[in-house]
Image (cartoon, rainbow over the protein chains, first blue to last red):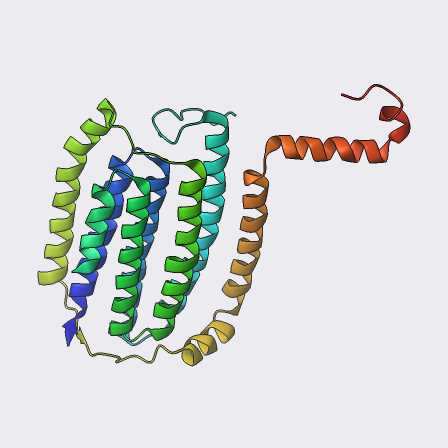
Length: 100
Length: 177
């Protein structure tokens, strides 16, 4: 018997860690991983609420979030490769132009 | 818990490959949490898609780009000074609200049937249209990833070859470059 709020607090901590990484990190790949961490935190709260309300729709939504995260990871990493190819750096401070 | 330790380790590591490995730890422990909440199918998909596929993408990209340690700049030090207390206050606020001001119930181990059968019944009846839309989305994502990651010279060369094939009398007779 675990209170649902414990899961929600864990989800909040994960989301905040993701926000912190997004703000602090200067490596573009690590920033991307922080975004994945935030998505995972939200997924955990979805599943926790699904368990609380006895509704399976939350778990289906987690499935959709995972699919969208996979698509986003593929496109984002391709963008990172393209950026590295033109700029030879992964530091976001030095990437300030969208133009190639 | 293991999950929080992995998340903090993700932030503390300066080398991206160590961050990626700690993210795998976070995802594996989250799969355990899903199992505790009775979401068996979601736990399996978490291990396969997140800890498997997405993390392989990340690790391959890190190795491909030969990512080294990140360097600290003045901006990142300012971000650390402002960001750490702000996010700490945010976390405490969220935790305080959830623990003392939310009337949430307790959950029993495996209270909700979250097996593949129930999920699939919901997914293919009530959520059929979103399912199809996601399939189109992922097709577009594949095309975009291939176009973005392919070398521009390769595209230019292919275009050149196609022009040769289409108009051999124009470019074939002249000087090649």
